[in-house]
Image (tube, rainbow, N blue to C red; front, side):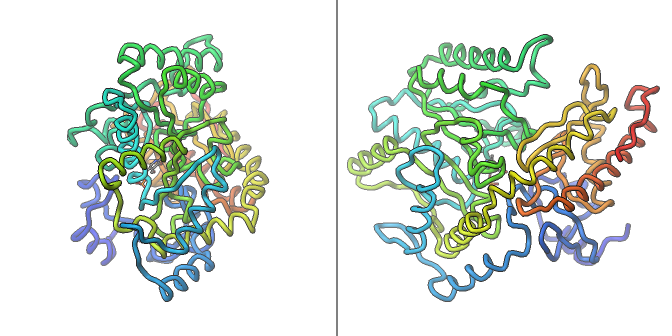
Amino acid sequence: MAKTNSANRDIASTIHPYTNLKVHESEGPLVITEGDGVFVRDEDGKMYLEGLAGLWNASLGFSERRLAEAAYRQMLKLPFYHTFAHKSIDIGIELAEKLLSIAPAPMSKVFFVNSGSEANDTVVKLVWYYNNAAGRPRKKKIISRTKAYHGVTVASASLTGLPNNHRDFDLPIANILHVECPHFYRFGLPGETEEAFASRMADLLEKRILSEDPETVAAMIAEPIMGAGGVLLPPATYFEKIQAVLKKYEILFIADEVICGFGRTGEMWGSTTYGLEPDMITSAKGLSSGYLPIGAVMVSDAIYQSLVKQSEKIGMFSHGFTYSGHPVTSAVALETLKIYEQDDILAHVRRMAPRMQAGLRRFADHPLVGEVRGIGLIGAVELVADKPTRASFAPSEAVGPFLIKRAHHHGVILRALGDSIAFCPPLIIKEAEIDLMFERFALALDDTFAMVRERGLVESGLVPALSK
Ligand SMILES: Cc1ncc(COP(=O)(O)O)c(C=O)c1O
């Protein structure tokens, strides 16, 4: 296909995140120019249903005027001020109070950042600061999990448990450990129940802590649902058992709510859905429905008191971003939280969830589909080369990316995480739009099935299932 003028200008000017830059030079970008509800429009006028809410974040869709107006009003009133050196901003105070009032566990204070990565980088520093304040200079290791996603800055990328985030970036940094990924479908043993699997995960965690020396292990970080690792839901009883181990060795627990926060699972927080009792919480994305970059770190009182103690000793808490608590991003976030409340977005998610989950599960019998999983308005369909053995396709076959291209062709934007296809539409999505998302996905899935059979990538003799 001939590339548009703006596609050529993009190739000449821009480095794209999470993109094969070589392929991009020949294929160019999909240039999006407008948004309307759960749809976005490209420069040729083609409309796509945004099945991932952009990057799991545009919860209120792409045309919420109240957010634009909140930004405009704040721009006119006070476009910038900062929160360094005892300064504050009225709207930021209001936002902090609001966040503390809806937190899933008792939280004492909020520290504002600009992204999920900055939030997680901040908690790494706070964990170290906390243990230095407590006179435990050896207690510094932070446990994350294989397939976790916590961002891309140096410490956050180290927490992330995906090989490509480390490879040739000289990461992870010291003091970051990765334990087993709790994906029951992939890593459960034959005959093992989900509960027994969760117990095994907790046992392995405890063994790792003991082998490292508990006096050196400071914290564990976890997403309630592992997002970019493939939309992996925790197995039954997992967090209960994991948290019992952490408590035994005085290890802090950090919930990364960057995807789950603000309604995604049908509760305000993934922590509420899965019974997490964190000492710190990181959030971003849905906090502003993605309209402006903002994140928040919430900390327990014990953590906060350690910051007070250290800053008294050192003379100052020397951490902060120019845009920590920016008035315009704060105004948009506050308006977002108001809309969630006034429109009862949680009730809406709970009403839509059965349609969404039934829509996903309709694909469970398809010969290309190994596992279907999800909760609330998030889910995934994992493609496999061989259903009985659960064998995956070789990554070099790029089956997931092929499906995504076909999905674009059929008018739905989704995301391939390896061969798991992720669904995470705007929370405002309606039933007919959920149906449309799956109708379009079904076409892309059938195109993909035809392709893999043509290329001999699946067992011959499989009966094609039409994904009506
Ligand atoms: C769970 C989680 N944590 C952290 C991040 C990083 O957020 P950001 O891209 O805003 O730095 C993401 C981004 O997808 C995420 O999904």
